[in-house]
Length: 105
Figure 1: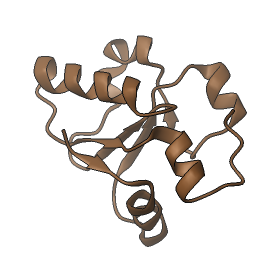
Figure 2: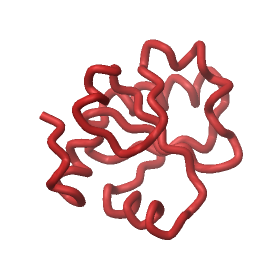
Figure 3: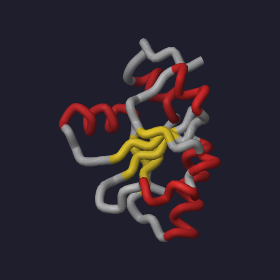
Figure 4: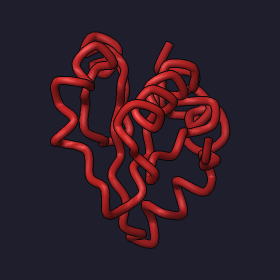
């Protein structure tokens, strides 16, 4: 499974590197803090597959990186996605390494 570090994601965002950012946390979690990505909760991902791009890297994140890894594994093995990237450490890792002002609990 491909992954991106929080610092690499920050650089992609700053440089305008083409990508899609997808948050697979629940809505109540996303209300606390977010990275500006598209919210598609883990339980809705299969019903919303058509919202995932296939022509750019899709960075998937959750709170710690575990749910997003599960989503990526399922989508790669069942639906043939080859462009999915896991955010290492999830949004907590991003807050810790890049933006300590994020208060994600």
